[in-house]
Length: 395
Image (cartoon, rainbow, N blue to C red):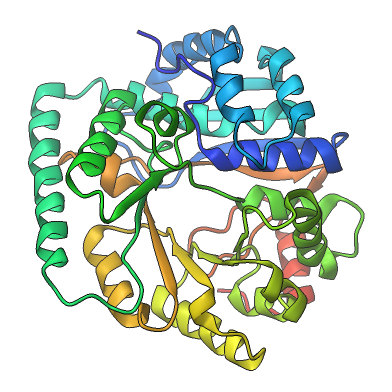
């Protein structure tokens, strides 16, 4: 069976960024590059023929009318974007897959509005093909045992005195899931057995099918694109945030903070943006230190942080999420997006794979992560320039 059978089996933020880029910068050319950050148990290059077949199948799919009706029913999605999706089809010529020694080299290159949605599907395809080679029955037995332990942890947590703000958990696990079927099982179990904590999923298909809230705003690629759109480099974050405000007019108000690091982000996140955005998302660096910086920034701007939200999404598990909650939940609203540890905790070593925007309009783009090893850019000159402009020290 094909890994991907529906074009809404992806993260919500792919649609929200897609709509913004279609409306604001539809002419942008972009390059997305696949990378595996850890060493798999067998060479990913062995998957080449299967990945090729899955991409051929992906490029045969179109959005169905019931899918368009659901996406179009989200209040922040505009009718012309739905009309675009109705005629959209992935173009096979825009994505190339090759064996590079033991690794896979996958590059999507073309008009951004035609290639940006490849990312999540490519990652889900590589993951599922990779894990199909392991003992599925043993993995599922272990996965269900670990899933039961997580649900019991939440039940135990529910008996504790709660903080000023509730603990809210989301599934962010599409890209590194063991399989699509397993993600559906995990999400349904959390929905059924921990509804007081489990509040949504980034997976649009599962949100529709299970009656959950679809969760997501923006990813690094959105802000990184603005490094190559002709604005002064020092102003790219402000330009990206301003376009987002104009596109969504108060919806989808969680800003991502670590494209050039939290300190450089806060220098741009002035009173105007701090009032307009509902909150911030953490995706690298020490989460509690990051939270304290955000709280201090709101205090400096004389904004009551209890009216704002912080969303954490960097390599979380339940225990780590609870620790962050204990440290911050009396002072601000919190949400926790857990990915790999929800949808690929099977007793097997998960792949740490990404597919990042690496160039736009023929220029390199990059993020200067607050976590070592997350920076992905092959152009050292541009990285040095970016660090200089934003006064970020090299690791």
